[in-house]
Image 1 (tube, rainbow over the protein chains, first blue to last red):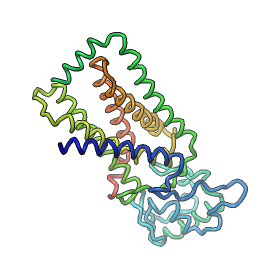
Image 2 (cartoon, rainbow over the protein chains, first blue to last red):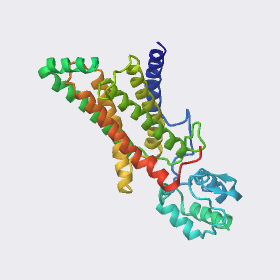
Image 3 (cartoon, chains in turn red, brown):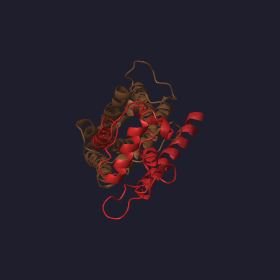
Image 4 (cartoon, rainbow over the protein chains, first blue to last red):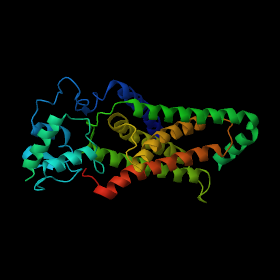
Length: 126
Length: 192
């Protein structure tokens, strides 16, 4: 009897959740999740990130996965960047290639944003 | 045993009416898989969706939920074998409910993972593994839709359901191997 009730409840829950997520695929994830903006508009116009500094760009784009103490981030998916003494060139090439599970940021940020971000990470990782 | 007998009778009496129903199930599965694949390809992924739910990070949520889904899928397969009398022990009366509940839980916990993949990452082909995972992820829900259709259909050959269930399970295993296991292998189990 209990199992039957659980079964029926889960049946409702499964189809309801599937329906909600299906709607969210078209309407956006605003109900349950935070989508930190769409891709930055790098062709024409001004990107919403254009005026932000490297620290803010790092928090928005990298902090979920990487720990970098000066930025106050504690992500554990990717390697800790503290003390790695990364050069701006390495940061840029890594962001472009997206090694392993890390996504490529090609086309996601403007050249100015990449410069700001790479410069910040280079300094903060010393 | 009762289920097996019932399915045998259904198969014997189905005759020519089974083929259209099987085609309908397969067609529905193909439509679901293709729809997801097309959506993932056409949709512009933001790659910035933070969707950790109860976990510390989104990747932890995905690895854990995918693994939980696989565990419940294993329960599905084992309980199905038991129901079909393949384990050599009589199935208890509650096993059918357990079989259904395990399947529902596996489906439910797979949904947030699939949602993040579709919304935030999309259909990608940056490597053989990623391409395989994209194809298999879409195929899983297609196989699942076909299996559910077969479960709810009558007068189908007795082998249809085990084949559909086995195929769905095999695809889920492949999805897990190309994602969660790959991640754990490369990065360790994510902090919860």
